[in-house]
Figure 1 (tube, rainbow, N blue to C red):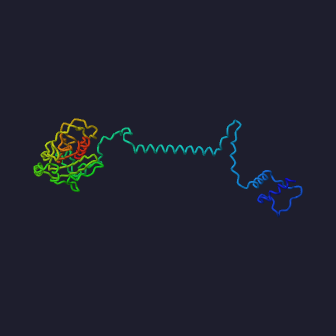
Figure 2 (cartoon, rainbow, N blue to C red; figure 1 turned 90 degrees about the horizontal axis):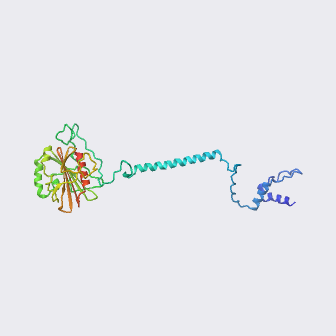
Length: 337
């Protein structure tokens, strides 16, 4: 009798679990429905604990007769395989990106064949000779025996290296043209009058120039003097060991020079006794000998090629670095060749 009382109390406490509505006809005698055990237990739990129970722990995986868990379903195996391939692709992509970055952003010494260590050379813009007038021969061509330069003279000037600042002591206009008086400011006042007369008599046509100063304090002045013919170039006496340049005590032949043609300055210890022929250009290289007139040393490179005389003058406190001086002379020579 107590069981019937407890069972009847459940639908009154939780109407939602009442299987028979109040308006339904009474069941037949002898067939009183008995609630399923699961429903009774669930109803009792709802009545006694209205709060939501904690999530039950997962049931342990089934074990086969051999003692091993059964294989996962086929769809799960496919999912795991896809995940493994995705991870592998991601790893290879990351490695590939790292390799590409390592090639495009390396130290040159880290790549075989490109192991050129920084030896102090300046970095110049890409050099290119200006276009010639239509039908004009190149300076060293077989049909140009005098070596006449038909290109614009300012286009043959060596550009300043990367990072250098302009040196306004070179009196050049916006087109690089330098007056005779502006050029002669490189010489002592005692030598200027005689040199000016020589330039007027020896067929001078034009002077162009450019100057720059690098971070180490080296000042470079480059001049190109065009004459009417190659014979007048040799007559000019302002670029030799007797040149009376400002602030220079005496000039002597540079004792360190490279004789290699089309060199990239791979060596600076080869003997060069004064002058040599470099791609059709006669080079004479001089340096101020100790004791210096002041705290600075001056080096001068004289380039005679056809109707053009080139001068590279470098000055630096202490001593001029041979490498960058020779580099500048060679590059200017290549532009004139």
